[in-house]
Image (cartoon, rainbow, N blue to C red; front, side, top):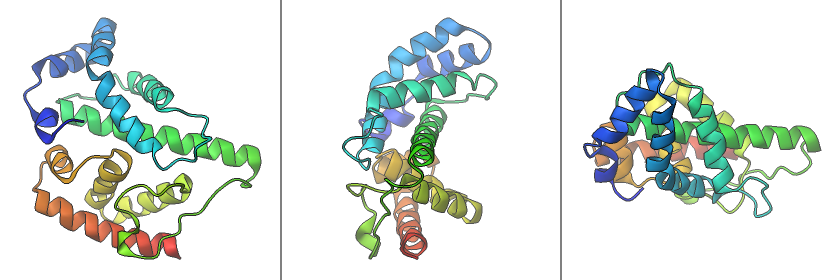
Length: 194
C-alpha cells in the first residue's frame, strides 16, 4: 500500500462497490477486484517474504485464494476501505496457515522450520524462513489476551504495513502502534522462544 492516506482517504467508489456487492451485485465484486488488485498483491508479496524459497504458493495465487474466500463473505457488513483491507490481510494469513497445515500433514512435520527468536529485534520484519503455524498459534493466544496487539502484528508482520498505515487502519495514534508493536514482539519472543 502506498501510504496511510491511501488507506483512509475518502474512497467512495470502493465503499460503494462493497455495499453493492453485499446487496448481491456480483458485477460490483468484479469491479472491486480490479480496483484493489495491486494493493492486495503488495500485501501478499509482503506476507510471502518469510516463506521458504521453494514455496508452491506465489503472491498472485495468494491474492486469488484470499479473494475467493472474501467472495464468500457477502453477508459481512462492509463499511469502508480499511475494513476491507484488514479482512483481506487476515484471509491471506489464513490461506498461508492452511497451506502450511496441509504441507505439514502431507510430510508429517518433516519440513517445518522453527522460528529462532532471541531478542526483541528478532521480529521487526519477517525472518528468512519461519514456521507459520507456530506464529499463527502464538497470534491466536495473543489475540485472546490482547486483540489489538495481535492485530498490530498481523498488519505489520503479515500485511507489511508501516506504523502510520497500521495506525490509520486501527484508528489509533502511531505512538500507540509503536507501543503495541514493542509489547507484542516481546510477548512473541517469549512465546516462540520457549
